[in-house]
Image (cartoon, rainbow, N blue to C red; front, top):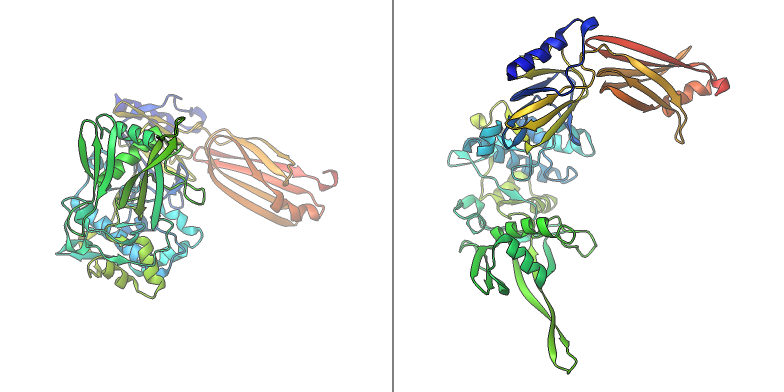
Amino acid sequence: MRRSWAALLAALLAWPPLLAQAPPAEGVLASRVELVPHPGTTITHGDRVYLGPMSIVGRGAGIGLVETVSPESYLLGLREVPFSWHAEALKAQVVAARTYLAFTLAQGRSSAGRQYGYDICATSACQVYAGPLDIDGPYGDRWRTAVEETAGEILWYNGSPAQALYSSTSGVRTRESEDIFLGLDVPYLAAVESPGEQSPFVTWAFAVSGANMQALLEHAGLVEGAIEEIGVETTLDGAGPWMVVIESEGATERIPTYQFRGFMNRAAAALMPETLPAARGDGRRYPQTLMSGTYLIRRRVEMGTDSDGGRTLRGDSYVFSGWGWGHQVGMSQYGAQAMAEAGSSYDEILGHYYGGLQPSPAGIALPANVAVGLAVGVEEVVLSPDGPVDVMIDGIPVGEPTLGSWRFLSEGSLIRVIPPVGLGLPARVQQPRIRPSPTGDVLFFAVNSPAEVVVSVSSPDLEVGRLDLGGLDAGNHQVPLADVLTEAVSRRQRVYVTVEATNPEGSDRRTLVIVPEIR
């Protein structure tokens, strides 16, 4: 049945223009859809822009969105450190990230990766990937240079890509891998000094009231009855994890501090998002409730005086005092920046944080393409190309190259595919008009179907401007014209504003004439 619906959609879109109709508004059901952009086309998802191609997969747990890119394009799209940082720190970050990618590929796909067809996720659970087009923004050329100057370099250990873990801030010293991640004991992830970090999270502190701590630990299932005491047992490097010890009326719990961090962060997000994470000294909030696995906890008691002059408990709280942000294993990103500013090269930085390992060619450790999981298990995905894309629904091509935004809704283990409004209809420009605004003239117009739109402004002896708006969805649009109209109007000549819309089914243009003398 899925293929018959997809075939019906393809047939509708393949009809001659005079017979073309919009596909059914309710869309069709499918298990997999692919969007392949033509050269120069980008695809917007949310507030991020990607190059594609894209795969949309339906599963019982929701929709998966996957982009296929080359490893170097993937690296260009990472957003792990500010692009304004020192060039050597950026190169160290690129090599660490490329090594992390190679290690992840060597381990094979996760269960979610196998289900949705991706190699690596796009969040901080893997590496933060936002698409390579932000590289054109401020300082992006510095990141591009770092990727190019370290092309193909990774860190190897015993013939395999190293597990090049990294995190934001160590808080003066990194942690032994086995003290944070139980069972992970490799010599190149040993604790090392990391002085000079100019991070706001080298140290941090906040307090939680006794009542709130009780609620948080009950939500996490870590207490039986009232809390009696909470503390942290510390160890030397390599002697095992620091442990949070929780004594309550009915039980005593011992939990590694990094694991307790996860319990606290999830419970705080569920129960107290208005107050946790806590406010910092400057009034801004910490990015997470517990920033790392390196902290101490002490109980603070506030005493008062009762009506008889005796001492009475007015309240209590638990004060967390910690160091660093992240898991603190491997390279500290702020530590790498500090070393670079002190004169260290990127290979010296990597050698310091990874037990002397040095960059070497990746060879076959990196394939030609990588599948990146942009979204997993979501209810809805909207993809907005700015130019033509080829679309396949369950392997069946959808007629000619298409324009416009596609919407995908999770429906059981399938996807409901909602095509662009007006898809398959010849482009028509409707209701063009110019209206004044406080900031200058604005052109308003509508198009009846997805189309590539160009607005041109000219006078009898001068073409003043041309605005290529790219692919637009059907509907109303507006374009500020203050800049392009200024010169022509100043010449007191007639000005012609032309809107031209083109799609595979046809094209249309409408021209407005502006007479400056009567404006």
